[in-house]
Image 1 (spheres, rainbow, N blue to C red):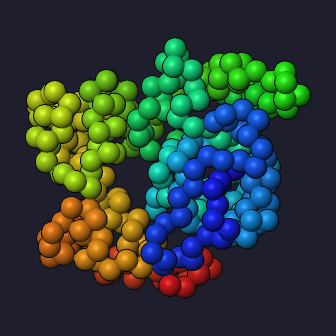
Image 2 (image 1 turned 45 degrees about the vertical axis):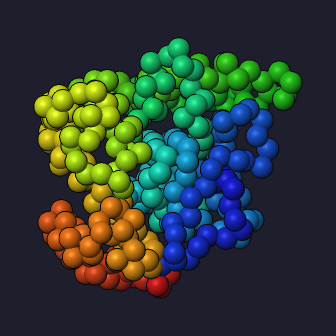
Length: 310
């Protein structure tokens, strides 16, 4: 459930990207809900929100498509949906249902605090690993995950006084660990290869990317050397630490340019650039387009796909 909805999503090109926290209409278990994807879309319609509107959430969503087809856009990547598609979106990612209501499936929502802290699944939700999308089709992995989600749903549907948060937590941990053992596409890298160093660095990067882009600052805050951070980032992503830092800043810049009408100078200041010209050079170097051109390109795509004109 997209929660704390102010009543209607801000239109594309507004001043902010709508961001919702976890607050379903009936929170049977704190920090957890499992529903049909079609129920989510209907809930948003009843609240006056466009199901296809761009937004981000402060919790995890995990969807297993069981029927129909469609598309889901997450941070400038559009994922095709069909039976067997597994999509795990992390807190803070910018997303939109390109064709809502055509695909349906099991939609699981949970906060980062919900998985049991005694399980290694807790580490899977404690840092930012980006989108997980796998096409399982009729594989054994699909059968396993489908069964586990069915068990989650059955437990969640029990009378309120008998539903067990602990059972839900343990089942969720099993689901996440099953997902984690799926093969990682080479293009995704392997975040686990960086170990605890990379996990701690990514968490700090999420907190601080708008205030510093210096690798030395992150090393100092975490008690490592820059060489150690570079080694961890190279193992996890194939890229040095400075490239990972700049990539995170560039992603946020892309989000704000594509989905808001904030002036470029305002976005530059928000991301720690005192001078818009320096921001423009940085953005062009990392994306290949000046900020204004990037914004206009994505504004045209929104109009073309019926997502609203700025």
